Length: 121
Image 1 (cartoon, rainbow, N blue to C red):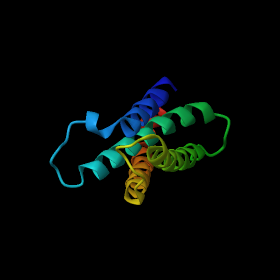
Image 2 (image 1 turned 90 degrees about the vertical axis):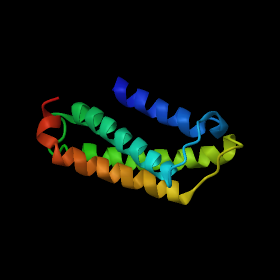
Image 3 (image 1 turned 60 degrees about the vertical axis):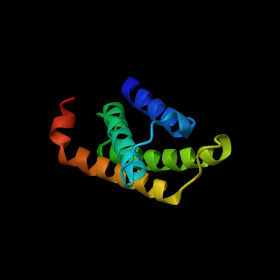
């Protein structure tokens, strides 16, 4: 659980910090790639947490995948809303939400593809 919380905290910090404090990178769509990667990792870390918590408690551990995906999407939407409320250098962006959701979806598919390895953890 600690890793999932740390991952969530890192994402929150980088998404809500003043963007002028973040070095500029001249690469097309880097912002969307970062959102995708953040939510890919976020989803994987929460899948690991929920699979451990649900182990032996639920007949179908795929609930961990669904819960983690939904959590990631809502977390991403919440961050976008908070950016528009609490930051001056950032704004809400629907394409960021899309990149977040795609990262979460790929995280779920990756976790399913590596289910045997994850179940050993």
